[in-house]
Each structure stands twice: as structure tokens, then as C-alpha cells.
Amino acid sequence: MAPASNTVNGAESNSLIVSFGEMLIDFVPTESGVSLAEAPGFLKAPGGAPANVAIAVSRLGGKAAFVGKLGDDEFGHMLKNILNQNGVSSEGVIFDQGARTALAFVTLKADGEREFMFYRNPSADMLLTESELNLELIRKAKIFHYGSISLITEPCRSAHLKAMEVAKDAGAILSYDPNLRLPLWPSAEEAKEQIMSIWEKADVIKVSDNEFEFLTGLETVDDEVAISLMHPGLKLLLITLGDHGCKYYTKHFHGTVDAFKVKAVDTTGAGDAFVGALLNKIVEDDSILENEASLKTVLKFANACGAITTTKKGAIPALPNEEEVLKLFQAAA
Image 1: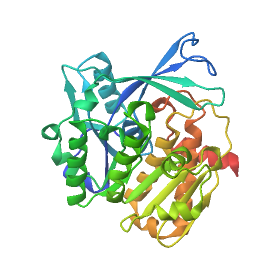
Image 2 (image 1 turned 180 degrees about the horizontal axis):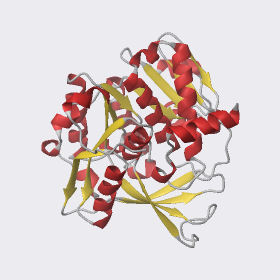
Image 3 (image 1 turned 180 degrees about the vertical axis):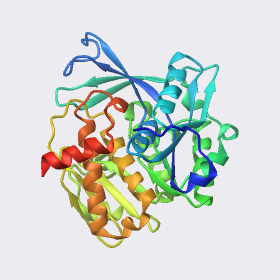
């Protein structure tokens, strides 16, 4: 159940996870396996990876806040209300009166994988400035989580870099999920360059197998190459493998945790559910980053959260609570 309060106070701040970036509306076809043009209709689904992670954290009983900019329109106010209804603090949310909330039309292929078409020209999230950041909220974060979409254009890029710097200076663990959306970038080269430009700042990084391929050129995840992506400050690198589970890498150990078998309907939000679950456990006890047995237990839980999310359409409506995860564990036992 979501917490009753959606504000953050100092006394509880030592367990706060702050997500930074975009929140938008995904329009998901009512029929899978067809093109956007052929889709008979669309379901309106709130999304945006950083916001999904914040709600995933809250739904699992954690303390979450979201920092970003929305259009001062019906969709923008709806999204802020969704954060509040899910127990996520919206103190870091502001509205832009001159730009719309971002929209994305998502094609669901027959296997539940997705293709995106975005409406952002520019959207409000791209126009967040440094001076609009709620620095007090960011300084309260024990974990500060972000993606790479906010690096694409100014002024949001500078706001992103400033927010990371403030969080790091205040002692936060920095969590990075690049969440590659190539259609949004001017070129693949620019995407790679910008994604890697903040790579060495993060303490925890999660990439998908597709993102690993994009960054390294390798179609399969090679342990040696994955280890070469580690940097001196990186405590944990995770590579999610869809229905094959995930791989983990630290300075001292690495391995694989198997996935749960479910019938996937829509993979939207699965990675965000995984990240939210992981961060929720790290914020409780960051020593799991140095204990392989503890980390594997946590990653099994995170895999279950990702799996459950694929069984329903849309990201936020599909994010699980702890009870649903325990049910999946029992069913798989």
C-alpha cells in the first residue's frame, strides 16, 4: 500500500530515493503485434523511466521523490496526481506554461517488445533549468537516480549535471540507468558520447543487454568486456537479460541470477521495476553491494518485480507490491 504522505521531511530523509528526469504519457496500442498506423486504439499509460522507478520504490514500501518538469496542461497535472496517489513526493515537480507534457506512442510487437515514436518539440521536461531545481530535496537523497534522456538538450542537461553534483556532495549514492531511446538523439554517436560522459560519476549502473550491445558492439554479454566497463568508483554494474535474468559485476565478484518464467504481455517498465526493487534494498542496507549472497537474494527479488511488470500493459499500472512478489516466489518454489 502507498504511504499516506507525499511530502518529505528531514527526519525520514536517510532512506529517501530521489528520481530525476522525465515523466510522460505512453499511448499503448490496444492490440499487440500491429504498427502504430494499424492500431485500432490506444491505452493511455503514465510513464517515463525515472518516474516509474520512483513509483516502483513507493509501491514496495520505500520512500521516493521525483524531480522534473511537466507541462501546465491536463496531462501534466494528471501525472503529478499519479505521483501523489502512489505516495511519491512531488515537491520537486514544477510546471512549464509554454510547453506541453511529453507523449510517446509505443508499438507493441507480438513478443511484447516495444518501438517508440515521441512527441517532444520541445516538451516541458527538456526545459528544466538549474535555478528551478529543488536542491533542498536533492540533498536529502540517500540514493539519487537518473537516466540519459535529460542529457539530450539544454537547459535540462545542465540541470541534470547540477543535480548529480549536489546529490554527490551531500553523500548520496548515484544510480544510473541510461535507458537508451535512440529516436530522441540527434545521432547514435551523440547518444553514446553523452551516455558515457557521466558514466564515471555513478556508484550503481544498470544497462539492458540491448544497451550493452549499443555501447560495446557485442551481441552477447561477454564478462571480460563487461568488467572493462567498470570504473574505480563503480560499486555495482548490472546487465539485464530480459527473460534470461541478469548479470552482476562488482570489484570482487560477478555472476548471473536467473529470471522468473511468466507470460509477457508488455515489457514496458520491467527494467524500472527491477531498478526500483534493487534501490529499495540498497537504501535499507548498502552493505549488500559487498556481499555476494545478499546481492543475489536482492537480485532475485528485483527479477521477480521485473517479471510481474511484463504480465500487464503499461508501466505504472503493472508495477508490483511486495505481496505480488511473494506470491510469485511461492508459485515458483
